[in-house]
Amino acid sequence: MTGDAVLTVWATAGLPEVRPGDGLAALVVAALAADAGRDPARALVDGDVLVLTSKVVSKAEGRVVAADDREQAITDETVRVVATRAYPGGVTRIVENRLGLVMAAAGVDASNTPGGTVLLLPLDPDASARALRAAVGAAFGVRVGVLVSDTAGRPWREGVTDLTIGAAGVQVLDDLRGQTDSHGRPLTMTVAAVADELAAAAELVKGKASGRPLAVVRGAGRFVTDEDGPGARVLVRTGPTDMFRLGSAEAYAAGWHDARAWPDRSEPPLDRP
Image (cartoon, rainbow, N blue to C red; front, side):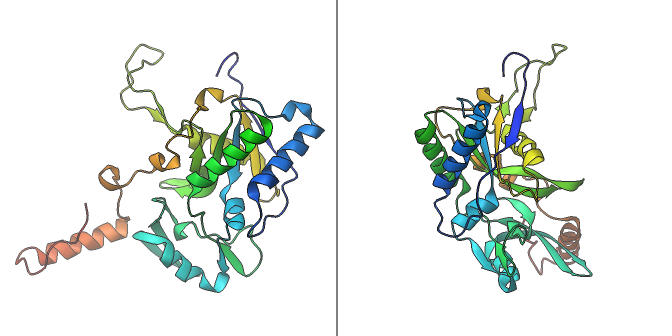
C-alpha cells in the first residue's frame, strides 16, 4: 500500500438470491455496475479485491442437498476425521474435507439456504475465483483480485471468522522472512496470511444476515497480481507440516492403543504421522 496505508471496504448491494444454474459472473458484474451507478466512487479500479461468500458460489454450482442427507453429506465430503465431540444435540465432527480444509462438519452448512436444504462447499473454489476474475476484468477493463470466503472456527479461539478457500489474482501469502523489524532484528518466521486477513475484513461489512455476500476491498493493490496465481490451496497446512493432526481425545486413544499393543507387538501402532 502507499500513502497513508488506508484500507476501504464496502459491501455491494443488488446481488439477487442465487439459484442453481444461475450465471454467477453476470449477476456479480450487474451488481457491481449498479453499485457504481449509485456511487461513482465505487467504480472498480486496478488493485481492488472482490470477496464473495462461498455459499453464493455453491448455490450457483448446484451444491445443494436435502437437509435429511446432511450427515451423509458430511461423511461424503470427509477425507480424514480429526476430532469428534458429543453434545446433547448430537455429535460435532471436525474433519479434513476434500479441499484440504479442517472444519466442523466438512463445511456443510444450513445457514442462508432455503429450508430443508444444506450447502456443500464449491467443488473447486480456486477455479470459481478465476472465472469470476476473468469476467469482471473483461466487463470493466480493470485488474482485480477475487477471493471466495467461508466461515470457520479456530483452535484455541472462541468465535468464528472468515477465511479464504478460493483465490485468483491475489498474493495469498506475504513472506516477510529475511526482512527486519522496526528494531533491525531479522524476521525468520513471519509469513502473513494476506488472503485470510482480507476475507475477515470483508466479512465485517458483509455480515451473516445482511443479504450482501459480495464486498470490495480497496487499498491492498500491492497484493493483486497480473496472473491468477496458485490459488488458496497454498494456505492449507497438511501432511508433515500439520502439528495438530489429531484431536486430544483421539491422540489419547491412539496412545492407549499403542501402549497396550506394542509390548508383545501383537498389533502394529496406529497409522499416523
